[in-house]
Image (tube, rainbow, N blue to C red; front, side):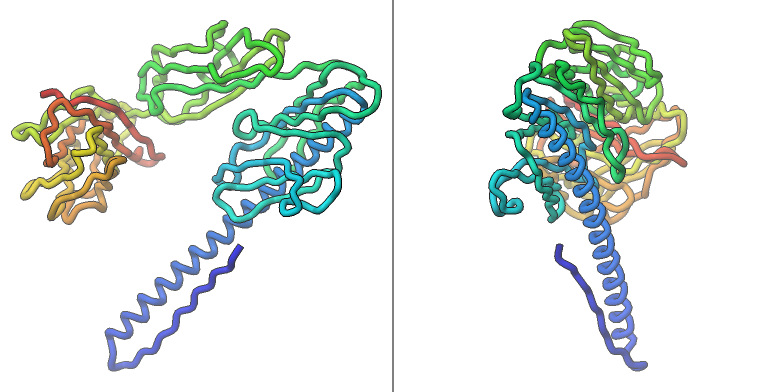
Length: 416
């Protein structure tokens, strides 16, 4: 890691007010730069600590597999760790090249690398059996030992060495190996859901098709939709739809439990936000112009909200500019009125444009209040081409007054 230091110096005289202002600016920039450097250094230290912790845990689990494998039979261990390090994804691999680990004849090294940090945690493994490791899913690693020269005792043994505690503490030792006993491998639960940002009461489809069982088949999928420990839905199908959605906006937790043909189970939980801002499915041509759009959202959050940002993403990349002339490009009619008015043409990137109501444009009304139960009508104009029958992805980011941020994202086609 490279240290970055910033120094600012200046001179002033009573005769130069301009120089005084300039020095003040330099000092402020220096303070901001110093703070950024401090934060970067703090993030690197956190990442190094967490990488070292996970590397040592995985090394311990590799040594466990090697120790069991020396007894003669093949061994497979499943170890579950956090799926990110200091906000970054990471990889773990075994390496035997001299550049990657200590030069040894037989031993391998474990290398843990975070995507967003310039640091690799490397731990040498004192192994006597052939070891291999792969990532079954984010944070879930399967470690195999090919076994040693002792008399075979049983078919492949499998243990789950999932971490019992969080980052910074020791990993649990797992269940006792039970010398000579044959254990089967646990299934691995995983699911996705659609839509990605559901609204209140909107049907949601959950798909556990990516769940796997290394040595058999999954026979039952059970779902806990309200985080109370009770599985409300279960069956042999990997796909289930919660037709009534969630009645409460904000964070929701869903847990999947899968059971394989050996009655072994595994669970997987995900948290996601449910929006309390309902899109009224009314994307239309803006009144008086073929090059504008209108749509509305209704606040069903049970509390007042502030509209903060608008996402505009036409599917047709030729709609790449807004220029409303003397009118505001974005106008919001809600409990409070807001607008964004640029002085000239405004580009829309291929991935869409996110407009901050309180910052973008030369003249605007700031954040927009939307009372509980009220509807906001949002107008966007003037695109550089007609928008009839065009598809759009649209979104509204908002903050619950006195609470957290949330967003509503939806798709629509402009009615001619």
